Length: 129
Image (cartoon, rainbow, N blue to C red; front, side, top):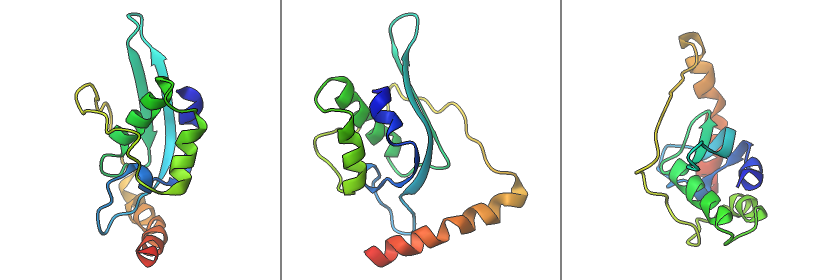
């Protein structure tokens, strides 16, 4: 699962993993997506990004679990991302069991610059339809 998840690190169009909403961008920068087990053998996934799309975390976790179960090879996750087609082979992981542990915002003097950095990506997505 770590091998598959690591393929998605960086800035990409996560359309295949987000339920698109008008006026939003599916281009996100995935900073961390790792898996481990605690002392009781419970699988722990950690994921962080500059922002997330609607259902993005639940879809990414569900797809990674498909790889972990052996249903797909790790490269399938990257191909899914690159094909930009929402998939039915994966599943939206149930919210039960997922926990939001921290939210960070840029300093207030950087809000506008951060917002403006995503306007070209949003305009490009709108042009693509």
